[in-house]
Length: 192
Image (cartoon, rainbow, N blue to C red):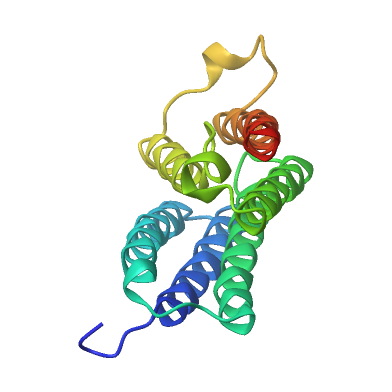
């Protein structure tokens, strides 16, 4: 705060990192040497986790945000989520449709969180669930590490899925669970 850094600036930096991560993951599917792009995508995801944590730390220190400030803080996060997950869907051994599904469920879980905030549910009720932004980014980073080290997927042939596809399914199912948990928490809060 003393350096003039605002939560909106951090959100924009996170958006740039999210876009770079998505483009890097996409490049793994169209490149003969994908390892460098897996590493770059993973590093961007980890740095984005840092931006999210910094944004959360800065928000209580900021003055009361206007609707315009909230919009310019939320929009970069949704762009980051979408580009990272769609790009991950185009990664080597992945699935564009699963990437799109993961992006849509992630955005909808953020929408439910925003509804909770607007109804005064607070961080505890509105942000709960097993697949938050940080959880998704950590899962993608762990999947990238497995791909960097060339973890063999032969034992997954019975499932007929690759490691990135399994990660996207986990994200989709986790986001659906998160949406349901948040919605139930918001309803419970509204009724109390």
